[in-house]
Amino acid sequence: MKTIDEQTQMQLFDLLENNLTEEEALQILKKIDNDPLLNKEYHLLKATYLNPNDSSVVFEDKASLYRSARVIPLYRKLNFRYAAAIALLLATGSILWRISSGTNTPSHLTNPVVSHSNSQPALENHNQNKINDKVGDSTNTKSFAFPKTTKKAPLPDLTNDDEIHQSPKAFNRALSDSNNVLVASAELNQLPSRRTLPNLIKDTSILQDYELVFDTPGKPATITKRRSLGYRLLNSSRYMLANLSLPDIELKKNGNKLKIEVFTYDKNPIANQEY
Amino acid sequence: MNQEQYNHCVDSYSDGLFRFALKNLKNTDDAKEIVQSSFEKLWIRRKEVDFERVKSYLFKTAYHAMVDMWRAAERTGELTPDMENRSVTQQKEYTGLKQVLEKALNQLPDLQKSLVLLRDYEGYSYQEIGEVTGLNESQVKVYLFRARQTLKTIIGSLEAVI
Image 1: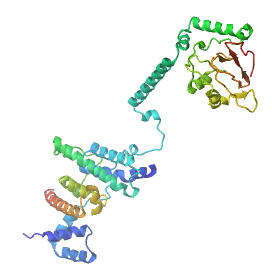
Image 2 (image 1 turned 60 degrees about the horizontal axis):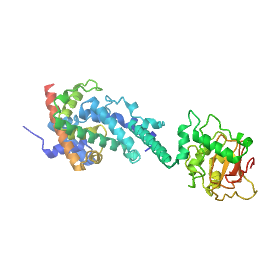
Image 3 (image 1 turned 90 degrees about the horizontal axis):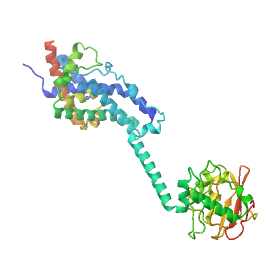
Image 4 (image 1 turned 180 degrees about the horizontal axis):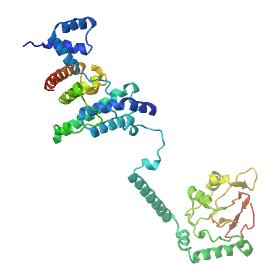
């Protein structure tokens, strides 16, 4: 039985693969025409080629492949576990922050906060009376009335020689949290230092609403250190006592004057002075 | 490659890629999975893949995914004949030579079948096929020659039976 050698098979393959030159192709085609067996082999080999235009197979789920430029909300991207972890971290951070704040808070500042809810704290009454006594003017003290809706502000014990400081963040928060005036340091464990207070007020965003005025035009307020001085914010739901002196400043908010009264415990207060 | 180009690739190549996978795997779900995963990888690496070479990237990705499937099937003993008997949807009825060729194609080794599909359906050159399969041009040509010879033999015998 006649067979076709492998070299000829390879020539047929090359012919169908377009691997031959035109001359080589004509030569093998002539052979095919003259040899029935080779012709059959050629057509059989040609039949092994698939039709590239076969469109019987279609991927019908193209819609699932398309991508759009829509904005995916962040919460969809976040895995629930990540969200839970973030929430846990925030909660832990908040607790730690409160704990750390509480540990730095002198007892005379923290105690009234704990006890102010139902009954009037004894310490607060005591401190208020103490201040009123020091001021010595009952008419002036009327303007220091505390609104019932806000937290009670404890009075620092100024007989304590320990210096009290307030962090800038806490001070700013106190400013921001106020309704229309400065909130006292009910939650604050530190008061502003004498040097940082002017800058603190300047830097705080509340200055967008307040206007800082100094008693000496053209000169910045100077606050010098004197332990026995404090200042009180009139027209305020709160008052703040601090180891400050000469807070020759006046704060205005939306046309509402915010008065600062300076007084000492040794002398008569610098009362009823509006700055 | 931007989003618009990517979607254009979906229009241009998803059918061919699905056909390539389906002919190789003979299972519609597996073929769909191959297509989905290939385009997913393309989307992830769209900034790295040159738009001009997307087709090659897709077929290469699909081919490697299929090789992994074949190997996994070999390990678990899930290969033919059960696999071959699964119904192949999307295919219309075959008649005559086309049906014979389909049967013959399914009897080829996986590698040879992939080469034939890439060569015939996608019109890839030996070099391009080599990029997809990891073979050099000579190997591609030799494997294709062997595949044609096998197909020719099978078709000859099947035609004789029919």
